[in-house]
Image (tube, rainbow, N blue to C red; front, side, top):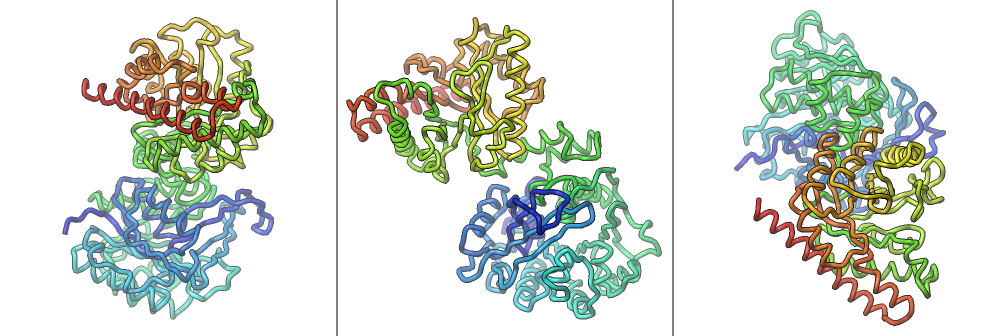
Length: 640
C-alpha cells in the first residue's frame, strides 16, 4: 500500500481551556481561551504545520467539543480517519493557567473520557499500513484497554515497515499516582509505572523524554543510570530533553555524561509558557528524523519549535509553520520574547491562517449588505424594517450559495444583527463593518468602545472590516488621525484572533491616478498595518492594478488577497472592471452591495415588492454578478 502519511500519532485528544490572565491563580481566572489539546493531538498538528502528512488515532465525544477537535484537525491538515466518535463518553477537558515561567496550574477532566475508551477495535490495519511512522504517548500505556490498542498499532507498524516513536509524556495523576489537584506535577516515583513502561520500550525506534521522564522509564533518579536501564531493553535512539540546556541524542551506548551526546543549536529566548513545549519539540524532531536529517539538525528543528512554544500562549496555536521555521533559522533571534517580535509574529499569523475557522478559496463572491446610512435615508425605513430587509438579503445570498464554497456576505450588527448571527455556521465568508458610515476622519461604531474592546464579543469567523476615505494628498493632521484609528483597530483585531479587511476609497476624496491606490497601500504597511484582505475600488486599466498588487507583495507575500468593491456601479461597468481585475491572481473576487440590493431595497421599503419578490430579484442580480466574475476569471486563465 502507498505510504501517503508520514506520521500517525495515537492517544489523548482534548480541549484546553487556557486562562487568559497571566500571573494569577487558576482560582482567579476570569476568562479562558479555547484550543485543541492533548500531546499526540498537538504533535499531529505541529508536524502537519511543518509539512508532514499527519494522522491521529483517538476518540472524541459526540458533542460540541468533540466536533471542535475534529474540525480543527481538518483545518490543521491532519487526517481524521482514525478519529472515532464515542457516543457514550465526553471529550476530555483541561483547565490550565500560566502563573509564571515555572508554575502552570492545571486540572485534567478525564474521568472516563472518550479518548481513554480507545480499544484494539479502533486500530485499523489499513490506516497503519499507509504511514511511515507511528508515535505513541505515555498516558495510553497506563490502562489495559488503551495499552492494548497502542501495542496493536505498534505491532502493525512493524508489520508494514513503519518506524515507531514514544513520547514518555509522564503525567503522574493520569497514571493514578497523584491527585486531581496535582495536574502540574511532572514526577512521582512509582515502581509499577516503571515496570509497565519498561515492558513496552523494546517496541520503539525513538524514545523522547525529559530527565524526569527517563527517571520514571528507567527506574532511577540518576539520569545516566536511568538511560542505561532503558538502553538495556531498547535499541532506540534516546533523546533526553534538558530544558534550557537543550537536548541530547544517544544512538548507542550511554556515555558517562549527558554532555557527550549529540546536540543541536539552542536559542536564547524568554520563557513565557512551558506547557506544550515538549510537543512542539517532538514535532520539529519528527520533521528532521523523517526527512533523514542528522540528529544535530533534527535537534535544531526541535529546539526551535520548542522555543516558539515556550514563547506564546497556548500549545498547538504556538507551533510554527515550515515557512516560519525556515525564516527563524535563517534570521535568528532578534528579541528574546518571540511573541513580541513583529516580523516573526506577522509570518506566524499569515502562514497559519488555514488553521483558523475561515475558508480559504480561490474565488470569493461576496454580497455586501453592511450598508447602514444608505438604508436609513430611504423613504419608509425603520430599524425593524431594515433588520427584516437584511434577513431577506441573507436569504438571497444563501439561495445563490446553495451550500457551495466561494460565497460570502458583508453584514453589520447595528441593523443586521439577526442576519449576521443567522449566517454563522452557514459556510459563508462573513465580514462585519466597524466604521461609522461616512466618517472622515474615520470614526468607529460606538459598540466597539474607545479601546476596541468590543471585539472580544465577536464570533471568530467574522472578519473585521474597516472603510477609510483617504487620499495621498490628505493633510498631515487628517492622515495621522485616520492612521491612528486604523492601527488601533488592526492591533485589537489581531489580539482577538480576528482577520482584518481594509477598504480604501480615494476617489471620493480626490483625483485618482494609477499610482494612487498603491501609494495608500504602502502608507498603511509603513505604520505596521498588515491587512489579511484589501478591498479596493475598480480600476480602469491594468496599470493601476499592477501597481497595487506590486505594493502589497512588496510588504506581504502571504496576504489573503483583494476583493473589488462596487460603488453602486451598473452591471456593465462592473463587468468591465472585473475583466481587468481577474487577470491578477491576488484579486480573489468581489464584494458588491448596492448594485444588487439598491433598487430592491427602495421598492421593498415602500411596500412595492413582496419579500419573495425582493429575494428573487436580489438572488438574480447576485447570480449574474457571480457569473460575470467567473467568466472574467476563466477568460484570464485561458489568456495566461
